[in-house]
Amino acid sequence: MPRIPRKPTAPRPRGAVGAVAAGLARRKAAREPRVVLTDRGGHPRTLAADDPAAAPLLEAAERLISAVQRGSAP
Image 1 (spheres, one colour):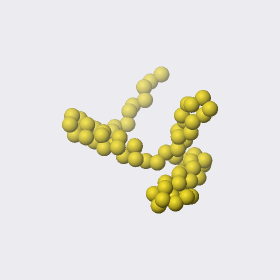
Image 2 (cartoon, one colour):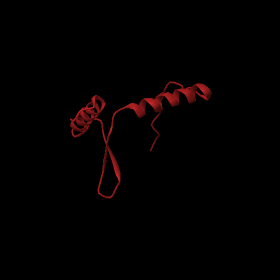
Image 3 (cartoon, helix red, strand yellow):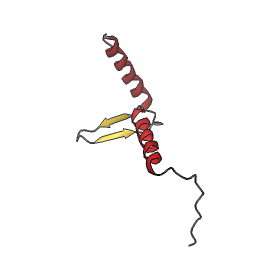
Image 4 (cartoon, helix red, strand yellow):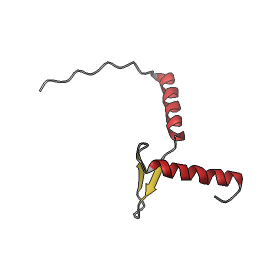
C-alpha cells in the first residue's frame, strides 16, 4: 500500500519563541469554559463543546457564579 503524502504545514516556531507561543496556547485553552462530569466511581469525563448537554450546564454555572459574585441567592 503506497504512503499518502503529507500536506505541507507552516513551520512552527522553535526555541524561546516556540516555548512562549506554546505557553500562550496552553493558557488560552485553560480559560475556555468546559463541562466536567464525575461518575459515581469518581472518574471525571469532559463533555465536548458541541455536546447538546453542555450548553445548559454552562449557562447554569454562569448564573451561579454571577449570583455568588453579586452576593445574592440564585
